[in-house]
Image 1 (cartoon, rainbow, N blue to C red):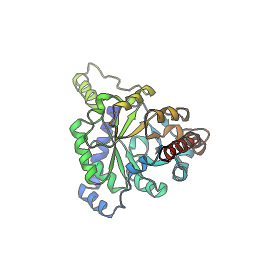
Image 2 (cartoon, helix red, strand yellow):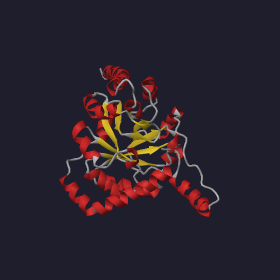
Image 3 (cartoon, rainbow, N blue to C red):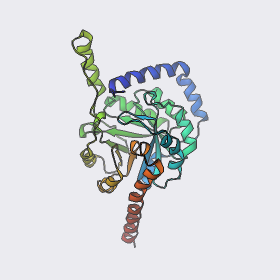
Image 4 (spheres, rainbow, N blue to C red):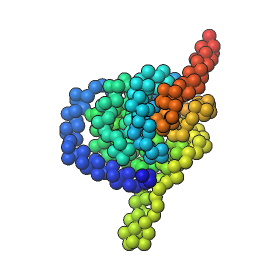
Length: 298
């Protein structure tokens, strides 16, 4: 299936409308009262360099994940010393649903991030009701006032927020008070839904042109250099396209964590072996940092 951001967002609107028919915000609020306490996603990421490991059946850029890896992922992530938190892709376009948050929360016993194309307060309530500890908000999908509103609602519900950006301009739209910033190196995310909608509405309605809005799904690791524009206090997350061989470089740039999914879930050698390659790069580096810190304070 060709990835088209505007198509996914329209599909998402239909999913939200259908969900509202099943559960009102009132229903979600009642579920929240009985939901388990939120675990600190922020604190987990601050406890030494590590991974946010992903669970998903499909990827916008990578297609189908390997079924065996998908099945094994919860147990492998739960036992890994470098997996600090787990990202659950809840979008139905990619074979997942919001109820998966509850399922995997009990299996991995680590903070859970709801990763999706979130655009409404309803979805923030959903995240909390079904067991998420944090949500992802995308600066290229949301207008600045929307991000602010969703951020405030998430904070009210005690959820942490990972803000995703691709450019310095997007970073500048992230609300004051944000503490977790992600830089996504995958170019397919750099398609603003408002631009796409304007183009489609202006031309397609007259039958003159139906643009191909399929984005470039390549990775540009140079995008990570914009980390220098993030606030010094921020917890910094590198997202997409990172191989074990790039771990040292990413750490050297000042990132605190990496979000890794497709490379683990599509690995032909199995998810345990693939994760071990990351562990071999991360664990010795963490020990070195710890030793240097102890020496400095001796």
